[in-house]
Structures are given as structure tokens and as C-alpha cells.
Length: 510
Ligand code: NAD
Image 1 (tube, rainbow, N blue to C red):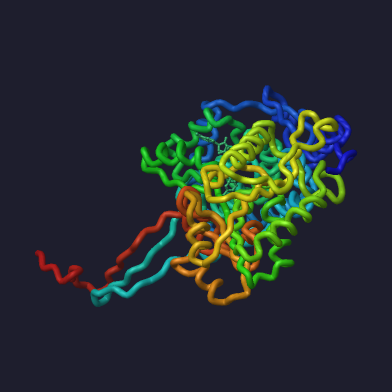
Image 2 (cartoon, helix red, strand yellow):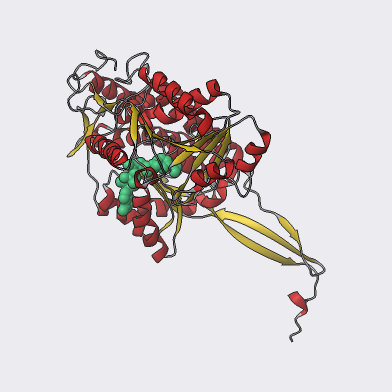
């Protein structure tokens, strides 16, 4: 642990205040009963309002009111708004990264990386604004044509998680805006400042390009008031990122009103390490995926499935790498592992380790709290490696902390079965130099996850690919390829230029 890295009281709050000013956040929004705390020190950084269900209702009304005008703006012109937003994000990358770092506790390069992801999706969305294409299809009837046309959907409600407080909103919003939708955002309760900073830049872009006001709204609501967004019939799509528990609450409510959902829920990601793997490369991939972001990514590596013949060697190498991993304030140079987000997260991490031991596991490295004296209100832990005799109950759960469970296998079929033997299905990886194993892992009988990688860890996706997972992860896809289609509605058109009225399937009528 890097003692002496914890910032002096008030230092973070001062940096945050300067960043909020530079981003143009309205000071009236920095008053209220909600305490915005930093997991780096536990201190209160700022205060924000607590929006009610009535506030949510007004934000939805505004977005609903702005929709008809925005829908009529040609898509490439809508792209100009996203282009300007991307430019402002580029200009203010450091300021927004300061907020991400302060509210989530990410190290600087990861906080900057998160803002870069927003810039990248803006670039992608601007290009997409000229490619919202439908297909034309041959008709079975002479002189007829079949086509599909994509239209704007309406209001998109975005619910986001604490750990990617700005990127996930941008994935949704950059695409939703070019698709002609308007957006209401309910950020995580722990990331109000990130939300206000991000929204201030979008507001500036809206003003500069002359887009309709009301196009975007932020509601600083807790999960109870946030239900108003879920239940509102004017919200055509609810895109919700967070835990499986949240998805279980949100999805049935939206389904009950026949709304659409896009769910990005928890993961329980595994990497298979085969005997042929390049262990130096695997080690780096494993350590970044398991300990990076203090284990608080949806794609964090939580299960390592290692061939019996190399398990001891690999575990020993991970443990010795962990022993040298700098844990401390993410604002300090050299630190790679920052804090857990809250005391509750720390308690869940401790409980999981106890349960693992009760289920026959052995904690080989890490797991303990550090820096408790220097930062009594913050929760820093050493990343843990735990050998498990089986994929028991604790291994089946996503504990949002840096704990990697190690399991062993003898045949590749066993490895795939372990990979797939949990309820979540987000990310997965295989480290191998055996082409057949790699292809089997990627094949239909291989990994059942939305992300399946070869010789690279489970985390750190690029925005060009569609992102999301299967099973309890919720089935949604965001970001690249055809994910934009989730933000539009499709009409199938049959156009008859024949002057006759032949019926399909040869049906005869009047
Ligand atoms: P969380 O489920 O506690 O909260 C996520 C968001 O949902 C918050 O904004 C919260 O206020 C809101 N929420 C919760 N219940 C709600 C309800 N009934 N109605 C309306 N809103 C509600 O999750 P978290 O602790 O913030 O984030 C960590 C979780 O998110 C992990 O499970 C992680 O795997 C997951 N996650 C998934 C992805 C992905 O793309 N699959 C990305 C990031 C995080």
C-alpha cells in the first residue's frame, strides 16, 4: 500500500470545484441535501439537489415535448450536435476526468480513458448519422417493392451505474440523439457531479448548434424517485445499466406497459488459461482485468479457469505481481489500485472472502484492508487471489471488488463448462496458442457470453463492437455495429407500382 498518497482534506473538493466551474455547471445545481462523497477520502465534495418523482415527470414532459421537433431534423444535421458535444468533451477531457476520478476513485489514466470513450462514441455516432439505413427486399409480386425504414423512437430514459458514470451515458446518448430521440438521464446516486459536468457540455452544444431545448435532461433521483422514469409511458426505451437486482426490478415494470428495455447488468467473467498459453502475456491480461479499477468493472475478471498442469505456477506469479501492485489514492502517481466505492462494498468484499473460506477456498494473496489509519472513511483493499475447490455459491455471485477465484480443469470441455456454468453471461476470454481451442471457445458450443476474447483479458472493450451480455446480464447491446437500431423503430413498407392488386401467397379475393 502506498502510504502518504491520501490527499489532504479539502484538496479534492477544491479540484472538483474548479472542474465544475470550467465545465460551466450552474451553481444553483450545487445546492441541496445530497452529499457527493469521494471514495478516495470519504469527504464531502459538494452538495446537490435530491430530485423527486415530480421532477422526473417534468424532465420527461420536456423531453417528450422536444421530440417532434428533433425527430424532424435530418439525421446528418442531428449529427452536428453530437459532433460539437464530442469537441467540447475533447476540450474538457481533463476536467471531466477530475470528476470521474473524485467520484469513482479511478486512477488518472482510466478516468481519462473513460472520457476518451465518450469522445470515441461521439465520432462513431456522427458517422452513423449518415448511415441509419434500411434494406430493400425483393417482393414475390410483380411491380412491388419491399423496404424497411427506420424512424426515431421517442424519449429514451438512461439509468446508469456508479462505475462508468459518464461513458455509458454517452454510449446511449450519442446514438439516441443521432437517431432522433430525446434523453432523460438518471445517473447513479454517487455520481451526480459527473452527470452535471457531462450535461453542462451537452447543454452548451445544444445552444451552439440551435437544437431544441428540452432535448436532454438529468434527474438527480434516488432509485425510488427513479421508478417514475421506468413507469412513464412516454419513455419509449429504458436503457438501464447496473446490477442484476436492478434489472429484475426495472424490466418487469417496463414490460407491464409494453415499453422497450435495453439491459446491461452484472457479469461474472472468466478467463480460461490453457497449457499452451503465453504466460507472460496471460499474466498481464489477468492482472489488469482482475485488479484494475479495483475490481469494479462489469467486465472485471472474477474467475480464472486454469489447466491443472500450470495452475500452481500461474497462481504464484499472480500472487507475486499482486504483492507489488501499488494500492492507494488514485490521484498519486504510480498507484494502480484505488479505493472501493463505499463501506458497503468493503463489507460485501469481506463477506465474500469469509464465505469463500467456508466453502473450502484458500486466500492465497491479498484481501485485507489497507490505509485505514490514513483514510478512515475510505476503503482500500489489496486485490485477492482465492483458490476454490469448485464453482460453489460464492463463485456464482458477482462481488463488486478485486477478488479472483481460481478453479482448475483437465479437459477443454470442462473449462468451457466452467466458463458457462454461472447465471451471468457478459465477458469471457481464453489464453491459448492452440488454434483449435481458440476456435472452439468462440464457436456455438463455446463461450455463451456476449464478449468472447482470445489472448486478451475480459475487460477494456472498444466502442466499435457491440457491448453487452447474455443470460442474467440482460441481453442488451450498446455502442458499435448495429446497436443504433435499439434507439429506432422499424417500419416495413410494401410499395405497389404495378397498377394491379395481386395478393401475397396467391390468395384470391374480390
Ligand atoms: P445498481 O444496480 O445498484 O444501480 C445502478 C443504477 O440503477 C443506479 O442509477 C440506481 O440508482 C438505479 N436503480 C436501482 N434500482 C432501481 C429501480 N428499481 N428503479 C430505477 N432505478 C434503479 O448498480 P451499481 O452498484 O451502481 O453498479 C454496479 C453494477 O452495475 C454491477 O453489477 C455491474 O456489473 C453493473 N454494470 C454493468 C455494465 C454492463 O454494461 N453490463 C456496466 C457497468 C456496470
